[in-house]
Image (cartoon, rainbow, N blue to C red; front, top):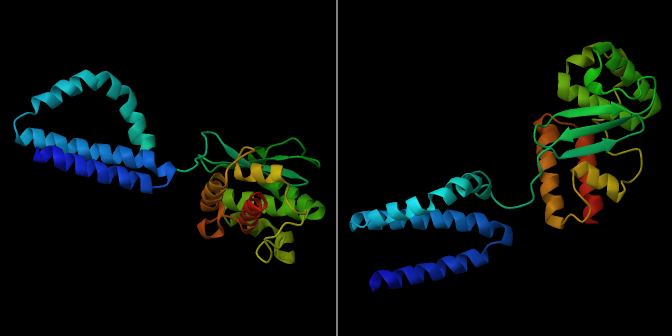
Length: 240
């Protein structure tokens, strides 16, 4: 009788605690709580000599647990909130380049839209071609030059700058002194592409996507001032 009463009181407190959590945190919290309660029950049954009931129940539930438990442990316990879908990408376009950032691997690549190398991907270019493309971008479009410098920094570090005589003489495209875009305000569609979101994304989805992207491209983490500024601009555009 006393054990039953204690169980009922604990269940009431657990229910109240779960209701106090944000909705997207309730599922993972309930799983953690269930694991804790299950462990306690096993211990109690072992102490009272009734552990054979647990083995019988596990034998009955084994086929279900074998299918469900791995997904619960890998996905259900990682917390709530919007997550990037496998293969989801963010896109940033300029006059000369369209860049993509894979959310899962952090790999950045791009396609050349205009100019002598139009149609080629950045991953296929050689070192001399990068410098030629960079000179073209600086002559045609400041945003494109910033995007390409971001790609080169991410792929080669600072080593490519030793061969960039034009950048050494002019101070580069000015990314360090200004993170703002010269191509005008973003549209909603462009902002969604930058954050890798679909139309109709909720406020929480936007905040989560912004945080996730900033962790990958923030200057403090070896990223780019320009891309960080565009990601911040995309968030402000979508949140109003």
